[in-house]
Structure formats: C-alpha cells, structure tokens
Length: 211
Length: 211
DNA sequence: GGACAAACCGACCGGTCGGTTAGTACAATG
DNA sequence: CATTGTACTAACCGACCGGTCGGTTTGTCC
Image (tube, rainbow over the protein chains, first blue to last red):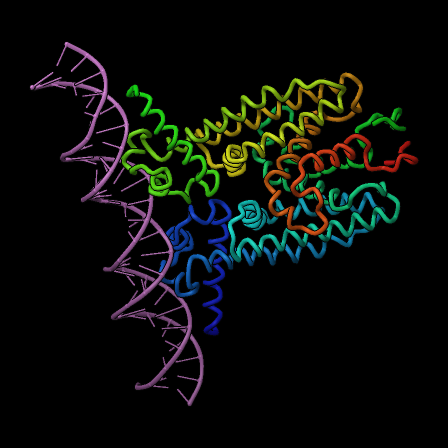
C-alpha cells in the first residue's frame, strides 16, 4: 500500500465523521474528543491532520459545498416547457437536499447563523449559486412568455427557493402537525406548490380581474 | 424599596440578558460566565435565581413563547375580505417576527434544531399555534369561495408560514444578493407574494385550462 | 539494515466549563 | 438585640475544553 493511501483514508474518515457530528449538533456543541472517539482515532491524530478545530470545520463545510455545487450542475439544464423546467428544478433541488441532508444541514446552519468568517462566505456562495441559477431559469421562462411579465424574477426565485428550504428544514416538525399529508413526501409537496404557483389560488371562473 | 422588588428586578435583568445572548449565539455557545458578565452580576447569583443553565434557558424560551403567543392574539381576527385577511395575517406575522426578533430567533432556533426535551416542545407549541390559526383562516376563506376548493388548506398554510419564516431568517443574506429590492422591506415582500398567491403566475389571457 | 518521514498515540498543558461553598450585607420579625 | 431569611459575592471544585509534546510504530528509499 502506498504511504499516502493509508493517510488519505484516515483523513477522509475523520472528515466524514466530523461532518456528521457538526451537521447534527453544530460547531460549538461538538468537541474534538467526541469526534476522535466517534472516528476511532486519537485526538492527537486529528490535530496531526488538521491544524485546528476551525480548520476541520472549514474543510467539512468546504466538502459539503463542493458536493452541493457539483450536484447542482446536473440540475439546471432540464427539458420540457417552462413549468416542467421549474418543477424539475424544485424537485431535483429538494431531492438533492434530502439525499445529502448532512451536507445541506451543515450549509444551511452556516447560512442562517450569520457569524462572520470564511465559513459564512463559503456557505453563502453555495446559496448564491443556487439562487442565481434559479433566477436565470425564471427570467428565461418569463422571456418565453410562460410567466407574467410584471413579475420580478428575483422575487419569484426567492419564493421558490424559500419554499424548498423551509420544507427541508421543517420537515421533522411538519410531520407531526395535524392534517399534513405531504410531511414525508417531497414530490407531493412540490406538486401542490406548482398547482398554486401555476394556476394561482383564484377559482378559474372568476380569474379575469379583481384586485 | 420592598425586598422582593429588588429581587425580581435582578431576576428579570438576568433573564433579559440571557435571552439576548442565547438568541444571538445559541445555548452551547454561551457560558454562564458570559451571561453573568453581560448582566453585571456574579455567576453565583445567577445560580441563586436559576437552578441550572438549562432552567435559565427554558425560562428564556418560555418568556419568548409567551410574548409570541400574546401578540398572535391581536393578529388573527382581521377584517376585510379573504385576501385582505390573509395579507393582513402575513404582514402582521412578519412584522411581529422582526419587532420581537430576539424572541423569534430564540424560538426558531429551537424549532429547527430538533433535539428532544422540554425546550423543543415549548417552541413547537408556538409554531403549531401559529400554524393552526392560519389553517383556520384559510379554511374559512375557502368556505367563503375565495379560494379554489380543490386546494388543501393545510398545504396553503404551510406555504404562507414558510414564506414568512424563510424571509425572516434569510433576510440578512437576501439583502446581499443581486437584484433583491425587497431585502429590508417586509411589506413589499408580502405584496409581491400576494400578487402571485392571488392571481397565480399564468398570464391572464391563457388562464383557462392547461395542466 | 540504517536513515528518514509520516502516522499515530498516551499523557499532559493552561484555561474554561457548569456548578458549589462559605461567607457578607441587610431588611424584616420576635 | 438576637434571629432568620434572602440577595449577593469571591473563591473554589472536578470535569472537560482545544491543543501540545515526547515517543513509538510503520512504510519507503538507498
């Protein structure tokens, strides 16, 4: 076995464990001892691979951001008409969040808390990336005439992204609320959203005018 | 000065300081020493009034929940037609979150993280309260014929609440995104949302049918 | 096999954590 | 005036924090 192989394996394992714990409990709640124990290595060994707790955290976040970024690539270039593209994006985005829920949680935690530092910037970049991608899609759909031209694509994107993010981070509690039938069914959630988003909430028969 | 007056004053001051710090940095990130120093009392004095850090936190959260609950009372019984009632609720809810941002942040922090315990239950009660209240409003609007009868009022409520919560907790970062003109203008945000929510996103001329 | 470096560990460091103790100040009660 | 109870503090406790150190193992190269 080459010398660096064993090394990277352990390093990856430590990082992986750290991501789990940081995502679950947050930076301050997790001690290096806890990570060491969970990873099955000595605490000193972690400090051999990462020069500080902060660096370990930053690298955890960076890995999460990379994963999130690369999975976005496959998401944006959907096919079909405007509505299918938007719904496709929402579905893919939500699906990706749940599939990589650890990474998403790690990033979201950092986006919502707004303490300064490198971590904050990293997480915000991912957020901004998703956001801008969505704005581009919406603007294009609008140019094609599918969306009302009076709408602000930036606001529409915020609405879409927010709808997804809220569902992701509130899923646990949503499941325990009365009458929620979409609690653990993201597709159903997106479908119901698209129904409103597309048709609006006015009954069809009197959707002529009336503000 | 009566003996109990001084007491309650100090107690309230400690609680108030604790709420500030817990809301800003979270439970684990804030030490009792930090609270003591910020409040200008000895750490031991805090333990004289609160038997543990957990109890101090629980009571902080309870106070925040009480405040949030009482301000909800004045919110639900709006006047006007269905759309005005819904918009009124959104506006009031958002306004309340920002006005009592410390309390809201404290509660939201506890809702999103889902560690077990009394704290979690307290915060979820507030959430559930807002939610149920909103469901009732929506259901009533639906009965009055303002909303399409095929819509699920539970989903609609989730959408509305989520839209507000997302805006509140992402406001900071939204302000720094390109093209966001509603970043620090909750009313504008609600207005744009209502525009979509009410009219739907389809251009009026071809909103007859097409799914 | 000897030299060297990286991987890894047990033991330890100063400092801070949540929490306790011993004791002071003081007003109310008898 | 002695007693009692409450508000309050400085000093302290064991446990644990992030981080370091000296030393051992392991694999590579010559």
